Length: 183
Image 1 (cartoon, rainbow, N blue to C red):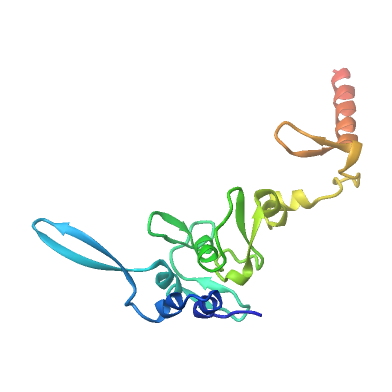
Image 2: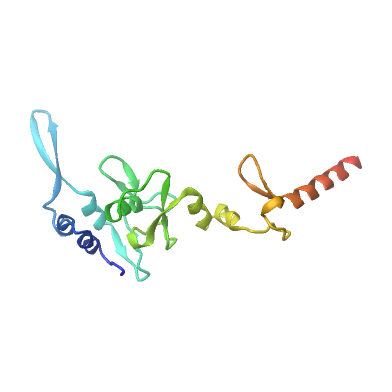
Protein backbone atom coordinates (compact mmCIF):
# COMPACT_ATOMS: atom_id res chain seq x y z
CA UNK A 1 0.00 0.00 0.00
CA UNK A 2 1.39 3.40 -1.00
CA UNK A 3 0.47 6.26 1.29
CA UNK A 4 0.27 9.73 -0.20
CA UNK A 5 0.15 12.18 2.68
CA UNK A 6 1.40 12.86 6.17
CA UNK A 7 -2.08 12.51 7.64
CA UNK A 8 -2.43 9.01 6.10
CA UNK A 9 0.81 7.97 7.78
CA UNK A 10 -0.43 9.39 11.06
CA UNK A 11 -3.71 7.49 10.80
CA UNK A 12 -1.89 4.22 10.04
CA UNK A 13 0.30 4.80 13.08
CA UNK A 14 -2.90 5.14 15.10
CA UNK A 15 -2.00 8.53 16.53
CA UNK A 16 -5.03 10.78 16.14
CA UNK A 17 -3.06 13.70 17.56
CA UNK A 18 -0.64 13.54 14.62
CA UNK A 19 -3.50 13.39 12.11
CA UNK A 20 -5.18 16.54 13.41
CA UNK A 21 -1.87 18.31 13.89
CA UNK A 22 -1.37 18.65 10.17
CA UNK A 23 -4.61 20.58 9.66
CA UNK A 24 -4.59 22.82 12.71
CA UNK A 25 -2.19 25.19 14.35
CA UNK A 26 -3.85 24.43 17.68
CA UNK A 27 -1.29 21.87 18.85
CA UNK A 28 1.76 24.04 19.18
CA UNK A 29 4.85 24.09 21.26
CA UNK A 30 4.57 27.07 23.57
CA UNK A 31 7.72 28.78 24.64
CA UNK A 32 8.00 31.75 26.88
CA UNK A 33 10.46 34.51 26.25
CA UNK A 34 11.23 37.34 28.61
CA UNK A 35 11.76 40.71 26.96
CA UNK A 36 12.87 43.15 29.65
CA UNK A 37 10.10 43.29 32.27
CA UNK A 38 7.41 42.23 29.82
CA UNK A 39 6.72 38.51 29.32
CA UNK A 40 5.68 37.50 25.81
CA UNK A 41 4.13 34.17 24.77
CA UNK A 42 5.27 32.94 21.35
CA UNK A 43 3.62 29.98 19.63
CA UNK A 44 6.02 27.68 17.72
CA UNK A 45 4.49 25.12 15.33
CA UNK A 46 5.51 21.50 15.88
CA UNK A 47 8.09 19.77 13.73
CA UNK A 48 5.44 17.66 11.99
CA UNK A 49 3.35 20.68 11.07
CA UNK A 50 6.35 22.58 9.69
CA UNK A 51 7.47 19.49 7.77
CA UNK A 52 4.01 19.11 6.19
CA UNK A 53 4.10 22.70 4.91
CA UNK A 54 7.43 22.42 3.09
CA UNK A 55 6.99 19.71 0.46
CA UNK A 56 5.21 19.16 -2.84
CA UNK A 57 4.03 15.82 -4.20
CA UNK A 58 5.55 14.95 -7.57
CA UNK A 59 4.00 12.56 -10.15
CA UNK A 60 6.91 10.17 -9.42
CA UNK A 61 5.61 9.74 -5.86
CA UNK A 62 8.42 11.78 -4.35
CA UNK A 63 7.64 14.42 -1.76
CA UNK A 64 9.95 17.18 -3.00
CA UNK A 65 11.39 19.31 -0.17
CA UNK A 66 10.81 23.04 -0.82
CA UNK A 67 12.44 24.41 2.32
CA UNK A 68 16.10 25.14 2.96
CA UNK A 69 18.57 22.82 1.26
CA UNK A 70 22.19 21.93 1.82
CA UNK A 71 24.65 22.43 -1.06
CA UNK A 72 24.47 18.64 -1.62
CA UNK A 73 20.72 18.84 -2.34
CA UNK A 74 19.42 17.37 0.94
CA UNK A 75 16.56 19.24 2.63
CA UNK A 76 17.31 20.76 6.01
CA UNK A 77 15.13 22.05 8.82
CA UNK A 78 15.20 22.81 12.54
CA UNK A 79 14.19 19.74 14.58
CA UNK A 80 13.59 21.67 17.81
CA UNK A 81 17.20 21.38 18.97
CA UNK A 82 19.42 21.83 15.90
CA UNK A 83 19.36 21.83 12.08
CA UNK A 84 18.93 18.33 10.65
CA UNK A 85 18.35 16.73 7.26
CA UNK A 86 14.63 16.73 6.46
CA UNK A 87 14.51 13.10 5.26
CA UNK A 88 15.94 11.92 8.60
CA UNK A 89 13.25 13.88 10.47
CA UNK A 90 10.52 12.42 8.21
CA UNK A 91 11.84 8.89 8.75
CA UNK A 92 11.84 9.29 12.54
CA UNK A 93 8.35 10.81 12.58
CA UNK A 94 6.67 8.15 10.42
CA UNK A 95 8.76 4.99 10.62
CA UNK A 96 10.72 5.05 13.86
CA UNK A 97 14.13 5.75 15.35
CA UNK A 98 17.31 5.49 13.30
CA UNK A 99 19.65 2.99 15.00
CA UNK A 100 23.24 4.02 15.76
CA UNK A 101 25.60 3.17 12.91
CA UNK A 102 22.86 3.33 10.27
CA UNK A 103 21.91 5.93 7.66
CA UNK A 104 18.71 6.78 5.78
CA UNK A 105 18.96 5.89 2.08
CA UNK A 106 16.72 7.25 -0.70
CA UNK A 107 15.37 4.40 -2.82
CA UNK A 108 14.24 6.96 -5.41
CA UNK A 109 17.74 8.56 -5.60
CA UNK A 110 16.14 12.01 -5.14
CA UNK A 111 18.04 13.71 -2.32
CA UNK A 112 15.21 16.21 -1.79
CA UNK A 113 12.55 13.52 -1.28
CA UNK A 114 11.06 13.11 2.22
CA UNK A 115 8.46 10.43 1.40
CA UNK A 116 8.90 7.72 4.07
CA UNK A 117 7.94 5.06 1.49
CA UNK A 118 11.07 6.04 -0.46
CA UNK A 119 13.41 5.84 2.56
CA UNK A 120 15.15 2.86 4.13
CA UNK A 121 17.76 2.23 6.82
CA UNK A 122 21.16 0.93 5.66
CA UNK A 123 24.75 0.80 6.85
CA UNK A 124 27.21 3.39 5.54
CA UNK A 125 28.87 0.72 3.41
CA UNK A 126 25.57 -0.25 1.77
CA UNK A 127 24.65 3.41 1.25
CA UNK A 128 27.96 4.07 -0.55
CA UNK A 129 27.64 0.90 -2.63
CA UNK A 130 24.19 1.97 -3.88
CA UNK A 131 25.06 5.63 -4.45
CA UNK A 132 25.42 7.22 -7.87
CA UNK A 133 28.73 8.85 -6.94
CA UNK A 134 32.18 7.83 -8.22
CA UNK A 135 32.75 6.06 -4.92
CA UNK A 136 29.54 4.07 -5.41
CA UNK A 137 30.46 3.16 -8.98
CA UNK A 138 33.89 1.91 -7.87
CA UNK A 139 32.37 -0.09 -5.00
CA UNK A 140 30.11 -1.95 -7.46
CA UNK A 141 32.95 -2.93 -9.80
CA UNK A 142 33.65 -6.65 -10.00
CA UNK A 143 36.53 -6.41 -12.53
CA UNK A 144 39.41 -3.97 -13.08
CA UNK A 145 39.71 -1.88 -16.26
CA UNK A 146 41.74 -4.68 -17.91
CA UNK A 147 39.07 -7.29 -17.15
CA UNK A 148 40.69 -9.10 -14.18
CA UNK A 149 38.35 -10.21 -11.39
CA UNK A 150 38.49 -8.10 -8.21
CA UNK A 151 38.08 -11.05 -5.86
CA UNK A 152 39.94 -13.81 -4.07
CA UNK A 153 43.73 -13.96 -4.41
CA UNK A 154 43.73 -11.24 -7.08
CA UNK A 155 42.25 -8.60 -4.72
CA UNK A 156 44.51 -6.24 -2.75
CA UNK A 157 43.00 -4.00 -0.06
CA UNK A 158 45.27 -0.98 0.52
CA UNK A 159 45.86 0.79 3.85
CA UNK A 160 43.36 3.43 2.72
CA UNK A 161 40.72 0.71 2.20
CA UNK A 162 40.68 0.87 -1.62
CA UNK A 163 40.63 -2.23 -3.81
CA UNK A 164 43.33 -2.96 -6.39
CA UNK A 165 43.92 -5.73 -8.90
CA UNK A 166 47.02 -7.79 -7.96
CA UNK A 167 47.80 -8.71 -11.61
CA UNK A 168 47.71 -5.03 -12.68
CA UNK A 169 49.81 -3.96 -9.65
CA UNK A 170 52.43 -6.58 -10.57
CA UNK A 171 52.40 -5.41 -14.22
CA UNK A 172 52.95 -1.79 -13.09
CA UNK A 173 55.78 -2.83 -10.77
CA UNK A 174 57.54 -4.82 -13.53
CA UNK A 175 57.13 -1.91 -15.98
CA UNK A 176 58.45 0.59 -13.43
CA UNK A 177 61.49 -1.61 -12.70
CA UNK A 178 62.23 -2.08 -16.38
CA UNK A 179 62.01 1.69 -17.09
CA UNK A 180 64.10 2.50 -14.04
CA UNK A 181 66.83 0.10 -15.09
CA UNK A 182 67.19 1.73 -18.56
CA UNK A 183 68.36 5.07 -17.13
